[in-house]
Length: 238
Image (cartoon, rainbow, N blue to C red; front, side):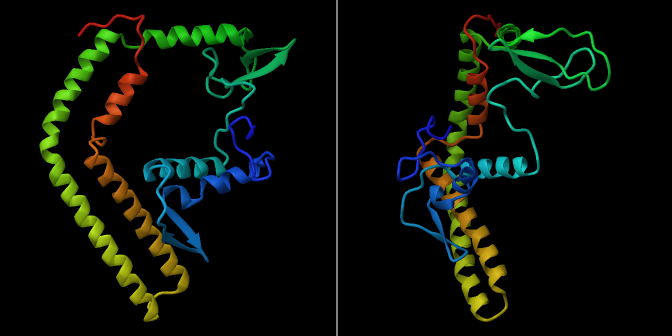
């Protein structure tokens, strides 16, 4: 599967799935590196944002507790429940076709088995009922753009505040080493606290860069949600 994603080792062989979590936890991708158990700021450019890196860590932590893992063979498995009895929908393959049916863990159920293609069509129709038209999304975007324009007046204050926090974090990192050398902190306490400060500093640096480039706004999640909900075939009244 890693080869399908364009991932391979230096020898060109597939990367073992067991190595993927290790790769995803590597702080190198946000401009940091780990040496002898301690996080350091690197001189290389970050490949991904610290926000994305943080979200990946949350997913890894959730999955490590036995959370939901997607089955590539059955994309809808464990994502939907039976409308008759509330049990999880499970799946199987017969004659090269995927079929979904109720797990019936609470007893007999009248829900019939459905082929994946038919289930896909039903889900698509359900999505259409809550999708937004071009007319609706353009009107909503215009309202958001107006609010974003008003927000621009506050951006300079936001950037100044974040730069002040950044300077304070740098001071904390510098003082932390002195505290450790004085013997007031153990090695483990020092490395844990330094990692926390460095990660916060990296996140702030990324946020400042986004604001200065005009890419950050509290309205961006709303724009992203509207874009994801857009569908040209449906009408919407403003």
